[in-house]
Amino acid sequence: MRARLQFQPQAGERKTAAGAIALAAVFAAALFALAMPSAVLAADIKAGEQKAQVCAACHGPGGKSANPMYPILAGQPAQFTSTALFEFREGKRKNAQMSPMAANLSNADLNDLAAYFAAQPAPPPLRQTTPANVAAGRDLTVKNACIACHGAKLLGQQQMPRIAGQFQDYLRAQLTGFKAGTRADMDGTMSSAAQGLSPQDIDVLADYLSGLPTQ
Ligand code: HEC
Ligand code: HEC
Image (cartoon, rainbow, N blue to C red; front, side, top):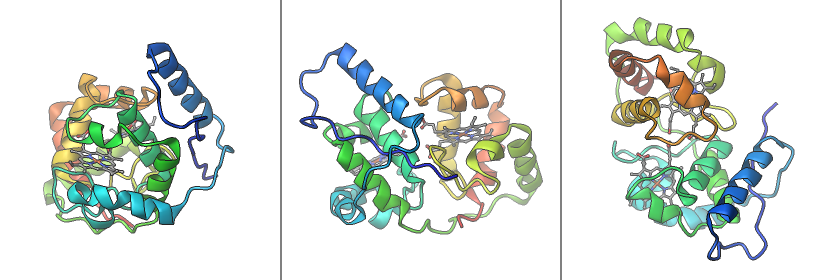
């Protein structure tokens, strides 16, 4: 079953001078929505295309970034993208460039943007895995159950991102961040998964994953 998370439009939509308690309530409500995959609202890909114009400056046209500083958004599951934007908006996930971009997005914006990027085909990988890491990388994804969550081909599903064909440096930085607790993680499952990885495992995985086909 392919569940789709959609954030409910808020009454009056924008945040007011909401305090910590209100923010916690918003987050709790979103987690509740995660547990309710049937909460599907119409997301508008056309509207998402309009709203995504400002994103292209960094993430490239259609989210097909060719600059390793900015992750590829094209072809990511909608539920992952809307959740990531939510985490940035609520200040749970922080990045000096990205946080301000998410700060004023409404819940409808999250859904429309996520639907738009999910509809863009992911570009093919920009590099090849070092031959020595092909088998070692595959073994690590089995041993650490990466394939159980991110899918057999690591193409992502529901709130789990596609990690096949993402930039090597970005993958390394995120895995290191999950392990250190500096990259936010919606429900803690990814941080747990990263705990057993050595820095060398992370290097092998970043090399392996970045060379995998994206379709
Ligand atoms: C000024 C540059 C910039 C702009 C403009 C920008 N972003 Fe980002 N975005 C980033 C950076 C840098 C990251 C990586 C943050 C990190 O390392 O955690 C990021 C990360 C993301 C992620 C997380 C992806 C992942 O795989 O973890 C999403 C989703 C995202 N951006 C969506 C958007 C959307 C939607 C827009 C337009 C509304 C946008 N971004 C505009 C710089 C930008
Ligand atoms: C129990 C499920 C689970 C397992 C096992 C798991 N992941 Fe994840 N992973 C997630 C979820 C959920 C996210 C999204 C976290 C968030 O942004 O809130 C994620 C995010 C990521 C990201 C960030 C990608 C991006 O674009 O931001 C990377 C990289 C990643 N996982 C790699 C791995 C690797 C490598 C393994 C195996 C060592 C693994 N994951 C195992 C659930 C899992």
